[in-house]
Length: 114
Length: 114
Image (tube, rainbow over all chains, first blue to last red; front, side, top):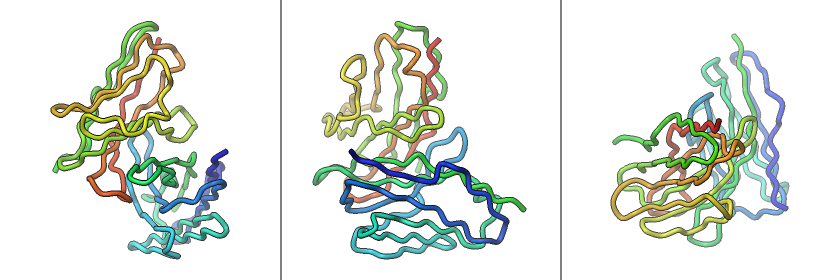
């Protein structure tokens, strides 16, 4: 069956350090993978999208890698700040051609302390 | 440009009543998605619609749930004869008419069934 795994335990790191979150999947061959941020009581907010033919994508302090052989994506936040504290979700597209159906992981809660 | 709008933000229903959740996509977006999120669980895909068409409803329960996205007006997720297990946060997302795009989420409707 289709499965996406993210670290279920919260990740606690000190301000200024790099946070690394993991997303592993099985039984998919996604065309792309996305990362979202979700704050309590709010809807997810899109952060980054990486396609299957891309190894790495960067946006400001964020970096995403995508290894289709390992079926894994890593999400990095460099120089982390307390404002980065949130739950981070990875999502894979599993739709057939011309559909954009996403499957989400359960998310990893990141806590950045001063 | 206003974001995705959902209303109501909170909805309380008694068992057996009907719940109607509304979603207005971002201007220019023709794709609408509905997700359900239970406490401590990830977002679960329910249905993907384009104007006047249901593209993929594979995540919708077979009974009591229906969705529509009419030519004019918001998308509606309708739950008939609600049960306690329907209590959850329901999120709507929209995307523009090109594939492999990020989805823009609304703030969600929190449904509580008494």
